[in-house]
Image 1 (tube, rainbow, N blue to C red):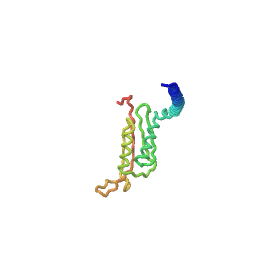
Image 2: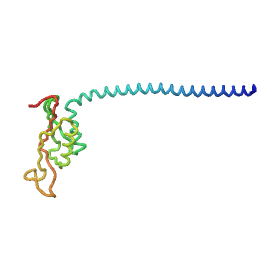
Image 3: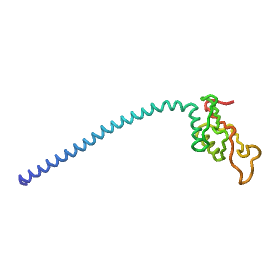
Image 4: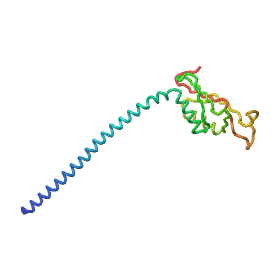
Amino acid sequence: MSNRQILLLLVILTAGAAGGRQWAKGYHDLWDEALVDHKKRYVSIIENALEVKERRDPVLEVAAGNSSYQSQLQQFAVESSSLGNITVKPQGDPDGDLRLTVEFEDPEHRYDRSQLASFLYNAEGRIPRLRTTQFTIRPAGSGGRGKVKTGAEREDTWHVDRLIFTKRSPTQRSN
């Protein structure tokens, strides 16, 4: 090889090394910036999680009592069963057995069987250890007196006289 060819080869290798160094430095800078950015994002995620935890703690303390059962029953009555607004009156020990008496806002309420069945199913199925202990209904037609008419063309609306749920405590024994 002549000196001119060797010199040309060395210049090409030097230019290639310089280009490779620039590419590696840019790639390293990209990774370094991403690492710093991810550290900042991780810190902000942790701060947000702690803030949410602090906001949720008082809500969870309230939900641990009987008010969560009241709000769940009211939600089932309004959203899934279309029963309207109800009032839930708790009686008993929140740590033990708790009786929840349901009263309907409208004194002349009339509901069909599917609405009542949906409400009872959601209440007993979605709230742990909650069972219907008293449920009294009467036909809403003709003042609720007399026998229920038979046949395919009968009116299927009912008036709820009494509805009581009991939330059983797993730690307390009943005699």
